[in-house]
Length: 315
Ligand SMILES: [Zn+2]
Image (cartoon, rainbow, N blue to C red; front, side, top):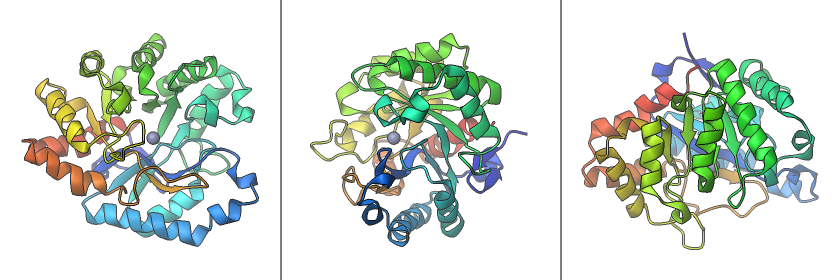
């Protein structure tokens, strides 16, 4: 029976509950730990308390599971995640894989497709890094202004690892959404194992593209919810996101829509993205009520936040 890999071990899909599929408990740029400021940026009790409170608030708002899509080298800290999950009672799924090229460590960038396929498979089936905690999804990304050869190779490796294990793939880099789809399909991945993320980035809105990806069978991520601050390139008012989601539901894609905040519990040594109020619970406390005001039913919310993650995460 297919199960979900959480940082505390396997979970029955029925226990996932309300799930946010695209968040970051920790987020950084590789190398921060070698800086003289490292201790200042990452004081474990302080960082723990902040994220722990965010997770408790998410739980109090009805949330049950968070998927961390930070990946290798940009903050992912399995033991820290396990502690957070154990004490908060929120299920945490961590990922294997990478963000776009500029946050991929040379150690990994210098290796070939077979290495990366094996790396992803190993992290999904044996354990991430030096732990025996298994990854629950594969993250792949591409830059905003180009799809580099390294990134393309990693999409192919992710596809192969997904086919070997059954694990789902979550993407980053919406400017190249059609190329993401094409690259993964070329390896024979089922579109129903892929979430194309960030379709609600302000600079790349295109409902016709979304509907086409939906018709192909991909999951559709409207996962920048709460990114409203002027000055962030992908930000726009949530009101616009409500319109996008409502239109996609009306167009028949209810069962493929993913909702998430893509927010950070703690940004290590980087300027925190968004406002301090934009935490994991925003989706449930602020966005869901707006959707309901726009006519989305409780049953439809349940499908997007509970039933769909239940189809994506188990393998
Ligand atoms: Zn993200």
